[in-house]
Image 1: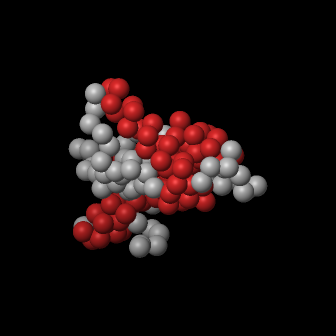
Image 2: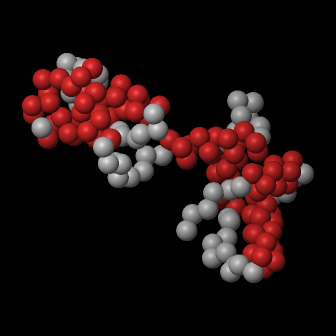
Image 3: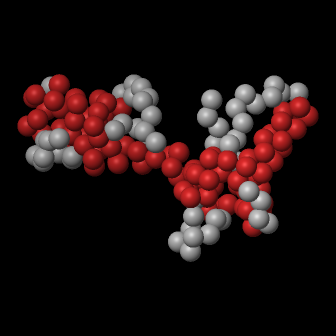
Length: 148
């Protein structure tokens, strides 16, 4: 199972790197801390261990414009990236119908509909709306824009 680095782990990476530790030594220290935490909390030991390549990727991916590693900024970047990931989730009941109603009533594009509904806490992708338009040709007359 894949585990993201925590903010505390990112601070450990930053501190150890500034003090000249190797990537392998940093990975070993993170693994030691994780094992101690598991033992003290009574949880099973982690199956996967951090590797030097994990630390290397983290340092390369999360560099600032000045080529420095900032753990807080790295954590924010990782959180933003997680939020951008598209997950295959079921559309809540009524959301597709509401999207079609906006398409017919307001003549909005699927992009506009998706953005508007997102502000209301209802999620539907623009692509799902396009799929529905393709599935029901009678909806295409409400679509006065480029169809993907």
